Image 1 (cartoon, one colour):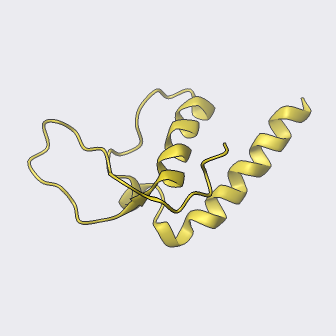
Image 2 (cartoon, rainbow, N blue to C red):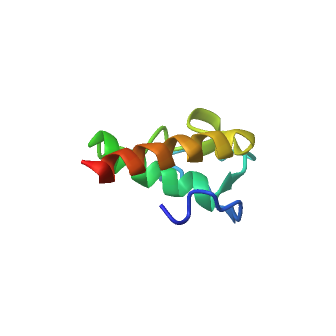
Image 3 (cartoon, helix red, strand yellow):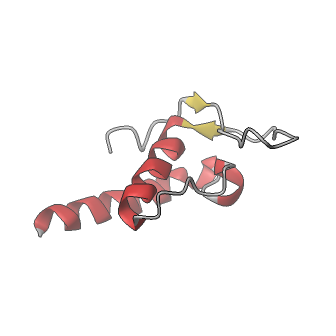
Length: 78
């Protein structure tokens, strides 16, 4: 949770069988929220393997991070 607001640039993970890479950017915060989503949803699947295109664009990171903070606060109230 302490990384979700980080805007430090991060490498986007891709499938090893993919034939193309993207020029899209990701951040440490977006990738941290991916890992939290896996835990939260209990899916154990990395979301779409192309972070900012399908999960969260960097310009929407602050809003998504706020949603995660609210989820975390509510989870810890239980």
